[in-house]
Amino acid sequence: MTIRTHLTKLLGASLLVTAALPAFADEIVVATTGGLMRNTLEEQMYLPFQEATGTEVIPFDIEVPDQWARAEGMVRSGNVEFDIVTATGPDLVDKADMLLDIPCDTLENVKKFGLEGACTTKGVARTTGGMVLTYNTETFADKAPKNWADFWNVAEFPGPRGLPDTGDRDWWVPAAALLADGVERKDLFPLDLDRAYKKLDEIRPHIAVWWKTGNQVQQIMRDKEVVMTMSYSGRSLATIKDGAPLAMAWDGAMRDTGYMSILKDAPNPEGALKYIDFFYGNSDGHPGFMEKVGYATSSSAGLAKLPEEEQKLFATYPANYEVLVDPDFNWIGENRAMLRDRWTSWLAQ
Image 1 (spheres, helix red, strand yellow):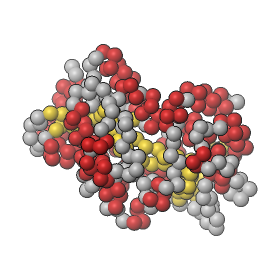
Image 2 (cartoon, rainbow, N blue to C red; image 1 turned 180 degrees about the horizontal axis):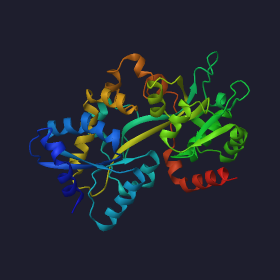
Image 3 (tube, rainbow, N blue to C red; image 1 turned 45 degrees about the vertical axis):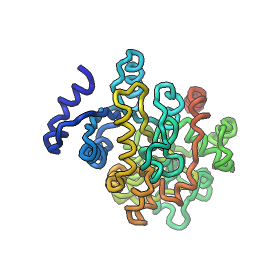
Image 4 (cartoon, rainbow, N blue to C red; image 1 turned 90 degrees about the vertical axis):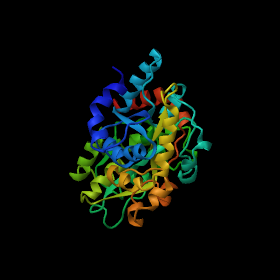
């Protein structure tokens, strides 16, 4: 049984009957994480797209590493069933041979509303956040940390810290170390790893938690196990909205973008491109999506529909976006194994 047949049976009642949609002329399968992300995309994007175009969206819940393993198997067998997959920046390099080239110039809504760099050869930005410095506002009521140099400054900003041992920590954390050591954002890549790890040796005794999940970083912030930490901006935002006394310092945050990519030999690449362009043109869906998932889209029209004070909590707010680290994904992708080995061996010391 194919993914399309199986999921159509499983999801038919909820998507077709409940929404009272007509029969669809064609369909696309979108592979992305489940839970809140899937449910919000379904509400704000999938169903409106189906109603507007007659193309059914079949969501397939899967974590990104498992998605790539499955997609690679599809490519080997010649039976590709995913149309749109979720990609990180390094994936656009690592998995480039599996991905369709995106004709950015033909996507009118992406051209009109997309932020600079939103459309790349192998993927179009879906969500953008930052690996951001998040700190306790009660601990630092008189003077707040503003950047990674302050994170390293344990004399003026004392207290236990947190750093990630998950995701792309093998370039996120060394990049933060180099910024703390005075390297300009524009000069970060290629990363000087010897200099970065020398700087990391300084902060290591002050790291109370090497956190591994989004839930964990929220918990250590709520429980005040740390006074500041690198965190996913969406997790920080959720914790702030829950009432925790926290704030985010965006200067030098690592831009963390999830992309929509299309597999080569996808069954419906035209429908996939139509959906991606619709995603950018459906500006009414962006505010609700952003508020629920805690991450910004790269649509300028969507951000503008939020109140100004809310806009400031997202990575794509202009004052925040201009101070994010713009990663060199070509260099990161080409050196991924080396970066991972260097990180693993250092942390094990």
